[in-house]
Image 1 (cartoon, rainbow, N blue to C red):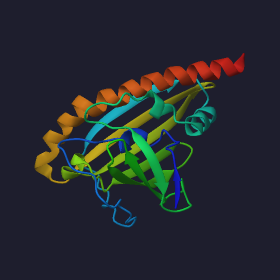
Image 2 (spheres, rainbow, N blue to C red; image 1 turned 30 degrees about the vertical axis):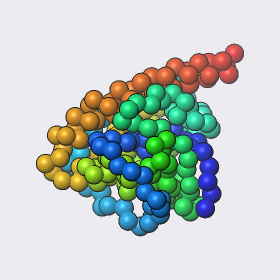
Image 3 (tube, rainbow, N blue to C red; image 1 turned 180 degrees about the vertical axis):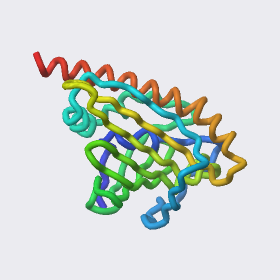
Image 4 (cartoon, rainbow, N blue to C red; image 1 turned 135 degrees about the vertical axis):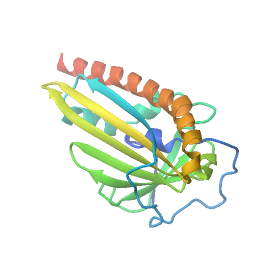
Length: 205
């Protein structure tokens, strides 16, 4: 297994979830890569980010994956902790089916796997959440859509969906998404858009 610092912005926000109660970190990190729940098409609490970058799509995706831009833009809160370490559980990342484990600043873990990866869409699933959120959330499904809207413009639509582990918990989880997840993701995205636009513009001079 390869242990590396988190590099990609793609899953960062989703994986940084810690929430909803105090739970001690596990003594042994999760490693069962085949334990992921089945993905359903309803019952989520979702936040959506919709922004336009003043950059070409290919440039944007390469730039975002080249450094920890989203991690650097995040402002940690009481309930949401930043990722600090990633272990790749196979050598296939970011191919479909590849799995990695992320450790957050409070010592907790999640597992994440690639569900879909094309030039237009990157989809991933987060599960085995060891923090307090794992007492209420079965898994997280993230979908990022990259759309070319101009010669030097790219629209990013990022849906971040929490699946409660019981239907009656959905209102509780939805409140957490609205109060904590939404401002966390929106703030980080706003700062990354500004930095990407500035960097690309400087390269064109």
